[in-house]
Image 1 (cartoon, helix red, strand yellow):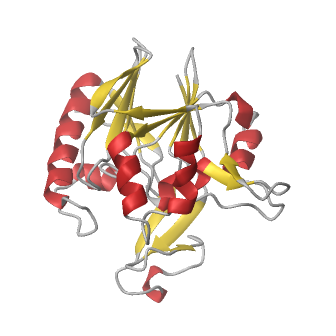
Image 2 (cartoon, rainbow, N blue to C red):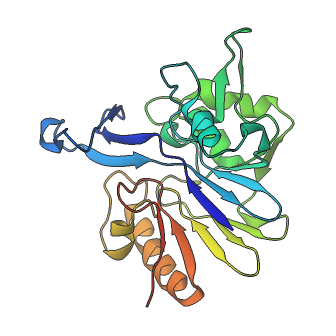
Length: 249
């Protein structure tokens, strides 16, 4: 399998939930609001023998030419966005779901950014996102999922096409889910915001921004050990320096 990080860049985010671009070559974290976190916004493309799989969809920023940055990132890798076959969503917070849809310049209507793909979203997370419209969730960005036929609403645990395992974990938000792609040779794990950075995976701490920080901490420890035993490659959505890696014993 081939892994391609599709970073939208580095950002700081504080209690306001606003994501402010951060230039790691010249900006200083100390100059940002107290409590600001420095994060990468980094969807991933995983290419298998069967699929072009997108894991989460970024903030949905457009470049100076008005092109969705996520689309441009794919084009830069020689991939047509229409080739994406699956969009797997860990959860629907705006920094993960903003690029799922876009407003068409001609019609002015919101459409899915990857109309040829099947979107996979937890049903309870979908309902929760609509109910919690505000700082973290944006109803206007995710509501379109309820209007399209190429969206599959997942239950708590299962397998897609026999080789993509999913499971609701909670932790970061009530219905957060993780994915494990197992093609019989390699295993790639996407932990979304339960395991967003390699540093978080390796140390025990309770994040104040999590819905259930203790559960997230326990899950990270579980995934770390299982990943070592089963030779997983971890994808880190918010890691500034390490997009993906294996973690050896």
